[in-house]
Structures are given as C-alpha cells and as structure tokens.
Image 1 (cartoon, one colour):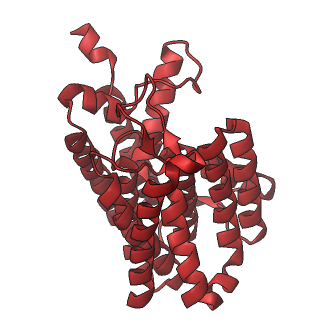
Image 2: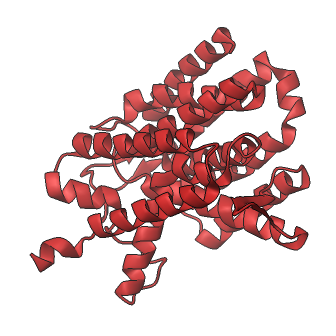
Image 3: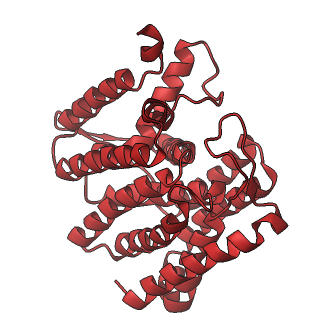
Length: 331
C-alpha cells in the first residue's frame, strides 16, 4: 500500500467535507427533515461527492497505470456516482437510478466481472448458465447497492458498516496478494474514516446517495472479485447486515400487505433506536453485528457452501424474529 496515496486521499476527503459544509446551501445539497428523519434541522448532504472524488482524483494523479488497467471498474463506479449526485440534487426516480446501475453492471459484465457460480453443494458445482450470468449479476449488484443505501438512516451507520466490510475484503486481498482488492478497499477505508469524523453523531454532513450508491457498487465489485479466492456463501456473511435488513423489511411489508417498495421506519436501526433512543449506541451495536458476520464469513471462506448456507439461513431466521416491530405492540 502506498502511504503517500492513502494520506493524500484522507486529506483530500477532509478538505472536501469542509468545502461541502461551506457551499452546500448554494448548490442545493441540503437535507430537510421529514417524518422519517431522525435529525431535526437542515444538514448538508451529498458528502459522497467529496469522499468518492477524494479517491478518484489521487488515484489519477498517483497511479494512472492502475486507473488505465481497471478503467471499466471506475467507469462503473463513476456511472453510479453520477446517478447519486443527480439524486442528491434533484431527487430522481428509482427507475432512473436502476438504469444507471444496469449500465454499470453491463460494463462490468462485458469485462468479465460477473457472478458465474453459486458454490459447490454435495460435490456439485452450481455454475450459472450463460444466459443467466448477466441477469443474476445485475440483480445482485442492484440489490446490494440499494440495500446499503437503505442502511444510511442514522449518523455514522452506513460508513461504519462499510468500513468493517472493506477491512474484511482488505484482509482477503492481503492474504491472496490481490493488488486490486488491496488498493480499492484501502482507499475507500481511508476516505470513509475522514468522512466519519464529520458524520458521527451529531452529524455535520450526510453522505447522500452519491455516497451510499457508490459505496454499494464498490462493495459489490469487491465481493465479485473475491469469489476467486473464497466461497460465494462466505461473501453473504461478509456483506450481511444490509442484505438481512432489506430482506427483513420486505418480508415485514409483505406480511402487512404493503408494497415492498413503500418507505417506512421498520429497519433494524429504527428498531434499536426506538428501544434505546441513542444513535451512537445503535450504530455501535449494528457495527459490532456486522463485525461478527464478517468474521464468520472470513472463517467459513473455505468451508462447505451447504453448511455455510444453512448457518446463514439460521441466523437470518433469528434476526427476522429479533427485529420485529410488532413485539412491543404484542407485549
């Protein structure tokens, strides 16, 4: 890892946060509280503009060859980043965001960044048929990108969870000597640490969709790349919390005969915050949960996919019943 590159990313990210705080109101990057908001006053949003550019610009200046080699990766991230900025400024429809994610997924697929198998079960390797590779890859990328976006509901939450996930991928990259995974994960860890100084409760800036969508895309790419070294099911553990949260919320909405896409306050972080009323406590607990999942994912990375899947489903069942907003009403 290049210390000068990482240092420049950290400092650039800090400078970007300061500039965002100064000029957000002039460009319309202000988050106005609504009925689902925890904060009570307008706060600058779109900090993803600062911390994503804090990675891309130093990489162009310090490691142009890396940028040229993996141009398709950064093109895919860049497309989603643009969609996020547009949404932060104009609140675009989900359909438009999905179009951008579709194009990003297509760029990755055309450059062989895709999901080709789902693991080995009872000695049989589940390889996806060629016609299903791109749809499944798009579904996985779009699903995770939006799942992380939905986790961005409390000060410091999405950034803290993302750092834990990125550290796990960094460990995988270091063990297997994968320079791409090492560089991409370490760059985003550093820029998020700078962002977290401004986003920890009480937050001075929010990451916005420019940040959460871009982070979701980065983590999805790292997950796909890591399947070269670890089992697909272990990836589920490593990125678990946003996935679990999204599935639990969708199931709860369907149980209530509500559209799965209807916004509400039934996410994990809402549940824990309602119990304790403390944002910092809630973020720490959920970050520790993600840490446990990531450690399990790392430990079972070479284990049986079938046993790992059973364990994941068991934990999912526990979480489904644990984070149930109806428990308080029943009591």
